[in-house]
Amino acid sequence: MSLLRNLAGGLRGLFRKAQVEREMDEELRGYLDAAMNEKVRRGMTRDQALRAARIEMGGAESVKEQIRAASWESVIETLWQDLKFGLRLLRFNTGLAAAAILSLALGIGANTAIFQLLYAVRLRTLPVKNPQVLARVAIDHRDSASGTFSNRYSDLTYAMWEQIHTQQQGFSGIFAWGPTQFNISPAGEVHNVQGLWVSGEFFQTLSVEPALGSLLLPSDDQQECASAGAILSYPYWQREYGGSPM
Amino acid sequence: MADKPSGLVQGTLDMLILKTLELEAIHGYGIAVRIEQVSKGVFQVNPGSLFPAFRRLERAGWLKSEWRDTENNRRAKYYLLTAQGRKQLKGETREWARQAAAIARILEAES
Image (cartoon, rainbow over all chains, first blue to last red):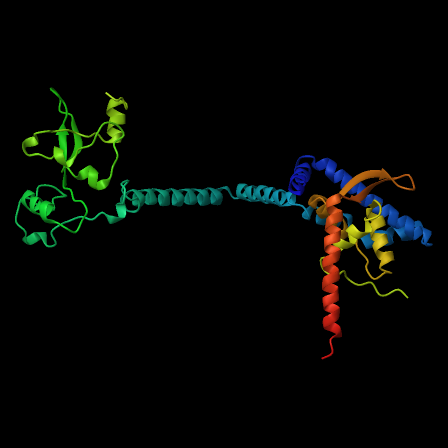
């Protein structure tokens, strides 16, 4: 209730400023008159009384300023005035202002870009169930290991993976993956898309839910691609198939 | 004998204004005079603190104001106490009495 009244009074001060100021003037003038009349009654001349009353009041402008300062809208008013003053100063010094604004813009832009990169690469966790317990199994000193490593993420040979897959006890789940390109064009011009070969436990271990259809299961993991299937990533599905359920 | 004017104890101006308005609506000058008279000249309130206090109290919802004609047929802004202001005055008076009594007890204690 009192908050509402405070708000209403403040808004009136901001938007009906002339009227509020007029009332303030009238009130102070009334005060001055009353003080003067009182002094005349006590035997001063009019001039003396007026001067004495003015001295007592201590400057109508400063009193008005104090009244304004007692309410919240004066903060907004001061802020607005400071802002206008600041802009005027900037206009005086166009070159310096332009240089300052430009360097600020560049600085902020560069920081944003760097942060976005860092966020995508380092800070953001994978959108899977427990990203903090994921671990990668790799050979410590690969220089001395034997086997064919054909791409950037080659950590183990297939034989090693088979052994680890069947014998590991440290993890609740384990899967293998390798990056690849698929040519999905049935004929004519080659149309390559990025993809992953994954083992059957891939989606179960990561606890990923399909938006539509079903995911690969360990039972799909058979030699010679006996039951081959593919999962589309969500962005690819949206981009290439318009999100249609086919 | 009138005492020499002294500054108000901090934070008491609001209470004094509310108390002055307890019986009837008065305009700004009237309130200043009343406080000075009743305190036998000990407290003189200058407009620079009086009017900001009015605005503060009005915003807090403890005072209302309205323009009325004075006894000499001039318009003046009269202040009156709201129900909330009355409650506030009661609370502040009680608190003041408690504190004053406590201070008096400390000052009178035999050391």
